[in-house]
Every structure is written in structure tokens, then in C-alpha cells.
Image 1 (cartoon, rainbow, N blue to C red):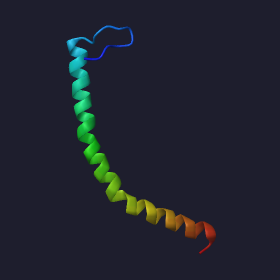
Image 2 (cartoon, helix red, strand yellow; image 1 turned 90 degrees about the vertical axis):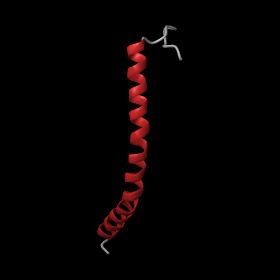
Image 3 (cartoon, one colour; image 1 turned 60 degrees about the vertical axis):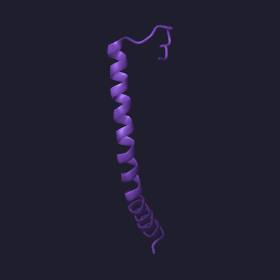
Image 4 (cartoon, one colour; image 1 turned 135 degrees about the vertical axis):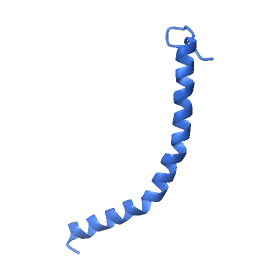
Length: 57
């Protein structure tokens, strides 16, 4: 178990909270990666539309 800045160990409640938050971030990382992968095509399309609009084409 890691120590805090002042060298003390986190309490059980804080450690439990940390573990729950870490688990949530791990679970969300999979969802976020899927969303980013699915949306990259839309981002490229939007960039292309803006390029054409700005250049007058």
C-alpha cells in the first residue's frame, strides 16, 4: 500500500474509495476507447467538410 504525501497510510475508508474509483476508471476506459474508435470516422468527415467550406470548394 502506498503512502500519502505526509508519509501516513490512507485509512481503510479512503483506500476503499480509491479502489472503487480505480475500478470505475478501468471499466470506463474500455467504453471510452470504443467510443473514440467509432467516432474517429465522424471526426475525419467533419474536418473534411470544414476544409471544403473554408477553401470555398
